[in-house]
Length: 564
Image (cartoon, rainbow, N blue to C red):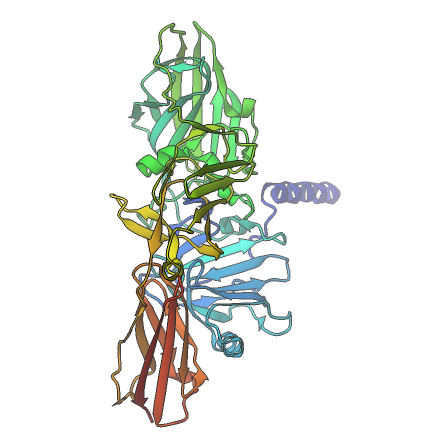
């Protein structure tokens, strides 16, 4: 009897491990408040999947951030954009937790970081401490929550990564978020795949009329179709305690009762995240700002999130047939929404053809292409794009019309301008810019290099480009002090820095000739120095700040202040 019970327990434990191989009680909540999410794992973002959980911090900064488990600090990175101030802790079980958009680190980590920043004389820094340099205990406060980097509001970005640096949904490790709501489906589209396919007498993508049902599921007005087709949906999920529209966890499709597609958002690698643009209808997103997830897998799609594929999710509809196509959408908690589509097979001889704009230039996706006209050339490496297509390429003076942003690029391509016809004094202040804004009347600086008379810029965006001119120096203005005044009561010295055209590239600040660490908040155009760094030893202090923009224009600000 005891042997039978032992065998049963062993089999049961193996089953549980197979269902969820991740430790359940190892990682704690990184905050000391109830977890409410702003964003979920693998949520669809611009050009990438969201790699963690965005945890709300009650609309404030400075909350204690705890290590999720003991370990050691393996990496620290501070950037003007991206993750801002980020901390990486590697744990004995092989996983690494990431804490990002931090306001500041705990005192022992802050001391370690500032020592390196002053040694290297830089605010932006990336450090890889030795295993024994910054050991972390369970429940230790390691940082304070903030809003640094590309964050739009105060929150903590939290990740768990495996030994291969692949992010994994933290909820798989037992981190609890209350969620009893079913996912919502906003819209559904049918895609005729080739020229012989049709949906409701058209070869174009077709929006279907979505019908909500009383039980929270959906159906659509019946469709008539023929040939090879696919479907796409716009869907989101909400947790119980937040209004945010978050990503879903799993989508499956069934054709006449047989599963033919599944995408499971449990884990991905950073090398594949850019291929989100192959999952969504990218052109639809650029035109309508909503993301349709295609429930079929096209060629040149290397995403590892798919499984249980039959015919890559496509279905084939024969004439004079009746079929049922179903879609299951689940959140992480297993709340499930169903969409049912009834399809009548009907081939029509007269259908609306797909509109294809034919131009003088054609891109073969698997071949390198160089386009040239007047003083402009554009080089596309092979496999820059996912599909072959006609590209609109036109040069008028210094304005380059390069198709439109509705075609996704998976690689950088290079734009070159020959500036031989410009005066030598003007060449130093030229840069390549993308025209942005509703009326295309704003210049967006594109990182530009110059070799002789050739300006070059790398980009992944098809759009309209011009040569920009920046002859203006950056602005530098004091915020909380005045020349020849006392500054004894303030902990911080604050300065406003701004460059309207090409943007700020770098800056350097000194007091009495000694370099000082000024933190740059790029969102607020603000430099801040903390007097607690104890660089100042004199009563009378000479402050000097040099700010340089992206084309090399510089401004120097000098003043004297007093402090004791």
